[in-house]
Image 1 (cartoon, rainbow, N blue to C red):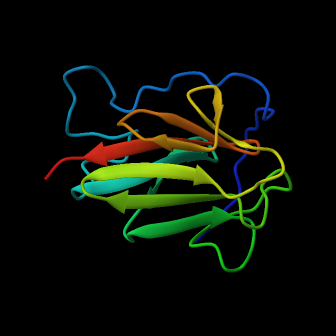
Image 2: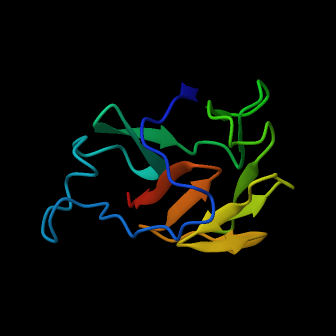
Length: 134
């Protein structure tokens, strides 16, 4: 999966919390894309709209390289930037010794558990973690 984000923030600016649901009572929509299938996703803004990137595997590699499960085409993203793991109901993100770091909700992390609505910055690419219950 390849994506090129249109807006960037620097790796050292704190991230801003994004609202994953459009309105507090609108649980059937995620970032304007309708009701997605139950599962775990990252959302990314692309050309003025939001795109869902499903986290379907137990281990998902994020980066700029060809071996990444989710490829992020931005020079600030390392070829092997981060790893997302799903185990025992928990979703964790680990920095994979990246050059520009991995940030969750504005804090640089080596490893962190993700919760619905968390903002993840990989290089200058901003993603939001979305958990759609079944």
